[in-house]
Length: 117
Image 1: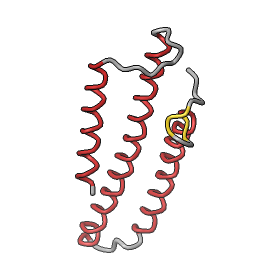
Image 2: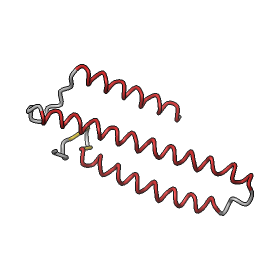
Image 3: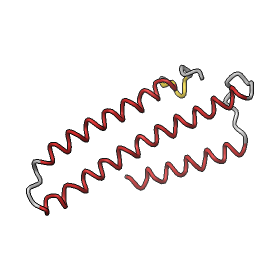
């Protein structure tokens, strides 16, 4: 599969995949630093009750952000794969069912994002 096609201005599929990996590695490092800094603040059970949910929320947001990028990459990959397999030279033509499924996924992602904010 060709990975240098442009998804939107200034971003191609290869860059999107690199961003997914880079974000994942960066979040791991950030979470490790955050936990090590917060660990020294936990002196009592009450401290843990306050701080641990904050760490959990940070994990949840990081995972959801990565999921959105992975979903975008999967959608683009499916579109390109469909175009290549149909012999259309990479044409990104969707059937009505695929459009409906894509819109349902977009609405699902948007509703999750609204809940997070």
